[in-house]
Image (tube, rainbow, N blue to C red; front, top):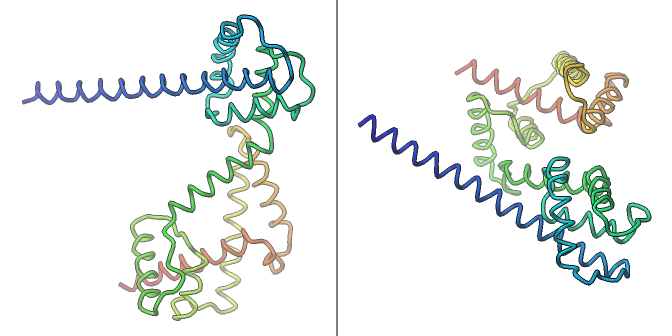
Length: 258
């Protein structure tokens, strides 16, 4: 029986490795085709005469730049490659001097750090996060809203993060699940302040590799923390964090009572 299990595992592992290899082969083929197509179009855009043996020359250029692209920007998709080259040929990254491997790589380098790519990545992430978050229906009955609260509380009890905090905050207030007096409000603000300080310190840890998004987070946290605690309501991040903290405290109180 042990031998059978081992053989089965070996077959499954081999199949997984084969699938991974095939996926990489398909990706390589798609990216090389994108490069070939866009370089050919680049001749038309720049009104440059095609070489006599253009197929051979373009293929040679593709084979030359492909490994460099994978090494520098392995995360770029086939569509992004097309976009980067199209931008470059239309002069969006400055004047270019001939359709050469050096210029092709310059276009892709420029695109990889462009605001355009950052915006596309953000849109993609926002769409992905939105699709993963359980969204409550727009109109719920009282029983449905209370059920939503109970489900969220049980998920929190099981170790899941509190999501849709703004919605839960409204439910908590409407049905008196959340009760806040001046002392509790002060405590919530102090707790969130400490959370933000820890988050900022973590981002400033010298052992971390600082990224652009980290710098933006640090700037946002610094701005909030430097604002008087009673005047931070103008910052969306602060307000949402306070609401989440209030919801968590209400959940913890209900869990203790059960």
